[in-house]
Length: 337
Image (cartoon, rainbow, N blue to C red; front, side):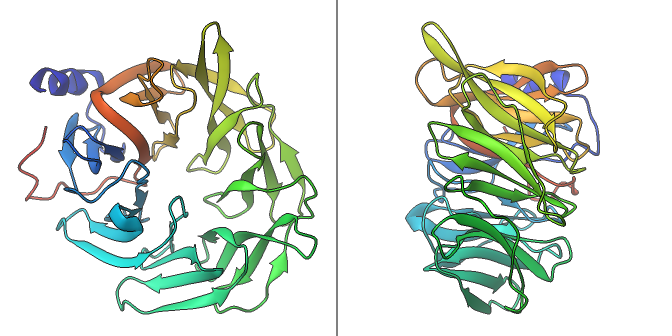
């Protein structure tokens, strides 16, 4: 463990703007959320017995709190300064959680309703929307983006004011279900994958004009976990490829209009989540599947130099998310690995 820490410190130099990476791992015996600090190469366990294999950490914009769906399908709010945890609701697995720009409210879908939960007052309200998914805030903090079926059953993107007024349809999709809808940080574009899991193509849409763009993607049309860069100019994703006898994945990037595809590095996993650093210069991803289907390594690649660095090996790792920006190190973090 000490050797692992020393290697990480040497490989990732101190940089105060790198932010922190939250990841879900069972390296402590049960699935929990851990923190990796690129500034000093340290790993710290944030939760104890609250996570599951499907837990995904969602950072608040101020980088103080993490929302996640943990054990019992309960939505938890973790304060990374005090390490206190609040339990606010019980929802379906894999539901997207999204923080408001002011880091106060959380939105998600439950029982055919869009829920807006004020994490300070602990009050919530609901917007009825049958079939809705992937609800997210616009940067204005006054509008929401989400996917839902239209009158013909085709999934479309809609925007609505947070007070349940001015609902507008953005797309006129006829290609089947839309998945993994993600609004760009500047609120001008959205991306999604379609039509399913075996074939997964990434498209983007200009939210002002409705203009669609389709990314070239990988060789097998199996493109997963698309993620916007913080500057809203690029998209990173995992593209599944095959070389006898195993599948693996390419970590690729492209412009939001699909005109600048690059392959940065490969992972030995069928697919891996990816996450951008706050300065949009690095991408974190998982590897170390070794044919088992479970990742055991966390890597960071510099998109300029295309040099990957292994910052963690051991245990199983299922998800990760880089924080928007770095915060001060809490004084109570005395036990790090």
